Structures are given as structure tokens and as C-alpha cells.
Image 1 (tube, rainbow, N blue to C red):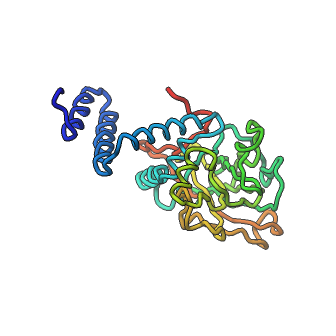
Image 2: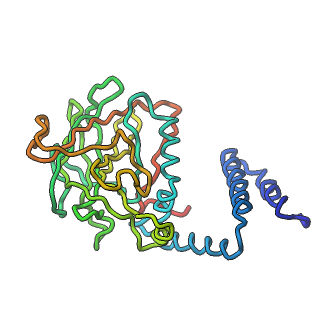
Image 3: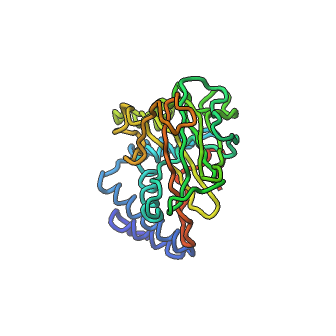
Amino acid sequence: MADLNQDTVTEAVIAQMASTPDPRMRQVMESLVRHLHGFAREVKLTPEEWLAAIGFLTRVGQACTPYRQEFILLSDTLGLSRLVNLMDDQANRVGEATETSLLGPFYREAAPQFGYGDSIAVHARGPEMMLFGRVVNEKNEGVPNAIVEIWSTDADGAYDLQANDPSVMDMRGQFRTDAQGRYAIRTLIPLGYSIPMDGPVGDMVRAQRRHGFRPAHIHMLVGAEGYRELVTALYLGNDPHIDSDTVFGVSETLIVQPRTGLADSPDPGLPSVHYDFHISRRAPHDKSGRVGADPSKVTAE
């Protein structure tokens, strides 16, 4: 131990972890140490840069509140959330199931419940649209009584969690499919928006000369008993940032465009999107989970 140098310190750290009883924890931490030490060697990290990084991560933690998760935002902007999401999708998505997307830092549990065709805009005002379709299984059969959860920005591009009173829920809700698996939701046409730029993650994004914008989108969470939960989002194809999402969430199959005059729309006069969500049965070995969380439920254990 007394003869440690920059070439031997990594193995010394890993040796101290050798008795970790949880094999998965041991695997993850050993790999983390190897890559972290390798990164420091590769960039020749200086003491000043190390201290700046400690300060940055400290500020990220200090920016977190029950209504804001700055660490999830950091993960999102570094593409880590999307990478974990893609790996989970590849390992667990079955057949023609709808692609997943990011849960993001603005999800909230216990959203209000609405009926078929109701509007989630309780207080917000702006141009409306209709989102409708079916929740179907791998045989293209409608899944009755499935939960279709939605959350979106208002017409100004802001979530309720960013309002003066973030305890008041708006522009989010839960719907149940009917006996044929159909759902219909009235909402506002979403607006593309900048991620929160008033914290340390915003400082990082500006320092990298990135625009910081997300394309207009609608978050969706679809679930039914016995099925794998689907976390996804629908992106408006005419948004100027559709090809440069700051958090890398867009997939081609999730791009939509509201159109008026759809004959099967519950309100053909409104711009409407018909989208069927395909969900798959949950396999016994399925270890998938959400890449994200309700900010108020993220605790230091």
C-alpha cells in the first residue's frame, strides 16, 4: 500500500472491494473504478479540474427539490438516460411493441383521472388537439381497461412543475381504455422548449454551445395488468429541433403530425393524431424498469 503510484492505485482500490457480497454491485463498482481512473489518465485530469467537477456535482445535488431532479437532467443531457433506455428496450421489447422514450424529469405520480375524450388542460389555455387510438397486444387485439397516462407542456412550453405553485397538477392525467382498447385525449398542441437553464446543467449546456431545446412532444405511459409498462413520447415532426433533441429522445417511429379532418377522430375539426400503442406481455424474466422517476420520490437512502 505504501508503494502506490498512478499505475497501481486502480488495482489497490479494486482489491479493497473484493469482499463485496452482492456480485452485481461488485461488478458495477469495479468497472466504474476502472473506467473512472482510465478517464482521469486519458485526459490527464488536473487537481483544479477535479475540484471544479466536485463543485459542479455538488451544485447539481443542491439544485434538486421535490419538484426538480437536476441529476436526471444531467443524465439526460449527457445521453446516459437514452443509452440505458435503448439497452433496456433492446433486451426486453418484444416484436412490434412501440418503441420507448425517456420518462424525463417532469413525471408525477397520482395524476388526475379523466374520461374518454376529456381535456387535461384544467387551467392552461391554448390551441387544442386530439390524441386518440387504441392500446393493442401482440395480436393487434384491443387491451381493455389499460391505463394511458399523459403529461405535456402548456402552450408556452412549460410544465406544471415549473409553475409558481408546482403542487397544482395541470396538463397531465390518466385515462382508461374502453372494451375495444380505445382511448381519446384532448390536450393542447405542445410547444418545443428549452430545458431548465437556470442551474448547473444549464451552465454546462451553454459552455458546450448547445441550443438546449427539446422538440415539441407529448409524454405517454401505458400499462395494463400482465403487460410490460410502456414509457414513450410522441414528437411533432415539424419542430425545428426534431433532429437535434438536447436529450436525444426522438425515434423515427414516434414522430407524428396533427392533422384536421381525420374522419375517425372524436373531434374531426381539431388537429388530431391517431396513434396505436402496441404493448407486450411481461415475461417472467423481464427486469425492465423506468429510466426516470417522480422527483418527489427520489430520496437518498
